Length: 267
Image (cartoon, rainbow, N blue to C red; front, side, top):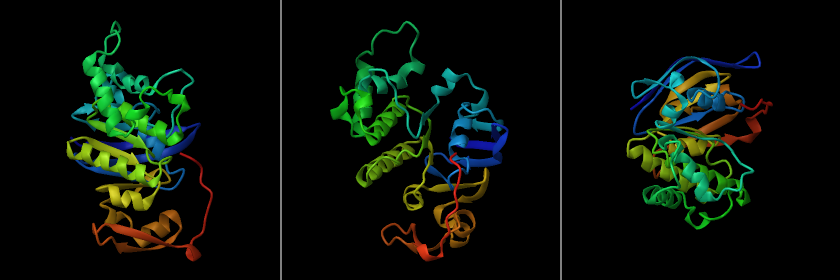
């Protein structure tokens, strides 16, 4: 099932963040959301889940995401934030179990055997099994990220949105997470993921959305979006593309001498 967005606009503090954004994220694929700092990537993700007030439409599986009851939407879609911590004395397993709340009644007791098995499976998929009984707030930023991915997987989402899920991870863990997302996409999950690293996005994503100043500046497969002219226009850098001989995906080589840096505001 594809995610279809049209005319999405959002503002914060009287400042326009997104303007008339429209796109489709195809099913069974990883759609990457890229763009400079301040382009509106995080705002777009939170808008789709009703966490940021917005106008426009967003449909998935023939339902209106923007106007669904929160609990019903959580049974359909899961969200992994850039960073989320808690002062509660929760174990890693406790945090993953939070992913099952939308499916439980208010009178539900402790997790049953099926839920415990699901939690264990999600921790295994994210490489966090050995941390199940650790206090969540004792983990590193990268470890916490992987726990939040496990919590999202516990929701069995048909739509999975992730905001910079590899930002605190080392290279090995980044590749493991992206391989996990590939398996989920191949199994039918529609995935929209914001990524900062353009080469990582080119390697992992089938479809790219390039946001610039709150609008879609380019959309399509990596080799269509990540062109030298687009990179110069949006990121103000000079770059050339070479083909990865193993995958034929584009690799970006930046010319430091030809780049200029300008400050951006965070999303």
